[in-house]
Length: 264
Image (tube, rainbow, N blue to C red; front, side):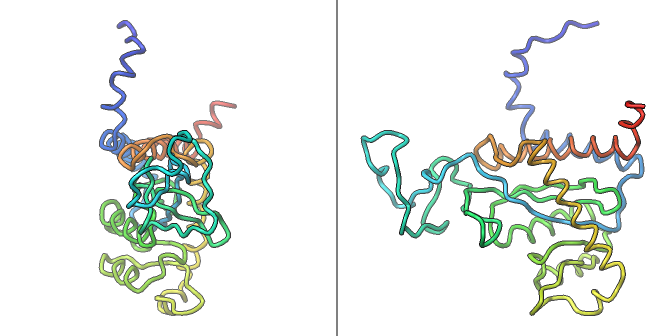
């Protein structure tokens, strides 16, 4: 029966409510609902990382030692020609979002200023059990995977992943934690051998781990995280956590038949 608070209260408290700490607390509460309903196991998981495009343009990616902006006096949105110019993260930085890094999905795609989001998924129900946001670099996926494994899946028996995780250091670190790394084996110089790949559980992990792409697909289309609306990882982490929590709520509803009952 209390009066509804004024809409301006939401704006005044936005920074206090939408931060990484509060978002993680909300995410963990939603995960607790799944655990209470026995929808999350503690045995088999999958991990994957994805690029989240930063709120910064190629024009903002300038040499670190540049003293003044190019074409002074032309305007803030002047034409810039990058042809023939060698640009990399070691020598250049974005003036809009200094934490963003130039990265690409594959050799056949264009490089963009990005951050990297990571998800740890339960294989049984495809629910997200942990989330990380890091710098986009070559080792971020494996480092984030180990952090999430220690934090949220300490008793995991297996961890499915793609070929980017097939390194001796990562496989060894997983074994130290008591987890078998079910990573996609490279054609040559793989860190796995027949002791792992001969088992049926390995083939099952490789099949199920691909479902994590459904999580990223939902986050980037329905959740609107294909391109960030915020600058800096501290501000992007909160929307990522909140959207993963929302994905879990939708998924829990599907597993419990809530949506079917509502339309029947």
